[in-house]
Image (cartoon, rainbow, N blue to C red; front, side):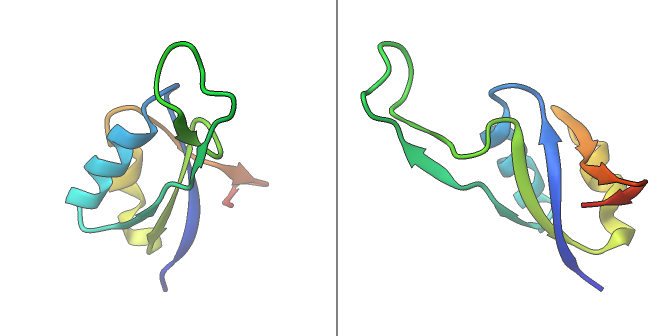
Length: 82
């Protein structure tokens, strides 16, 4: 059964992880916000939750998520994926 899971990424690698997991045919959600005032360096659009993306997957596909470059792993609570 598929559900939404929270995936922790390396710093500033959210978009790279989103692209990689999308190539694995997973549904990925990366909410973005426009920053105001605009930062002096970088884009004015940044992730709402830095270092995290959301993946819609079944437990059988966890290995693909955890082995993706720039992924630290799934967020767990009590040993169960969040």
